[in-house]
Picture (cartoon, rainbow, N blue to C red):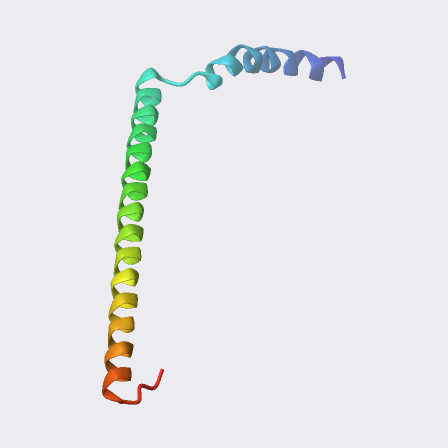
Length: 85
């Protein structure tokens, strides 16, 4: 057993010496990651603005359709035409 412990000890020391280097990341990779996060935020903001514009457009079209429906119903009532809904 003691000979096995002597053989494992240098490997354990080497592993302990190299362990902190595995936790470090390069500044270039960190800068690229930050750039990607900024681009993702910009894309999400653009998507939010586009969604708001589309929602406003749909709401406006619903209002126009409701007004046209009311106008058609009134015209049909005045002329005596039966409208099936």
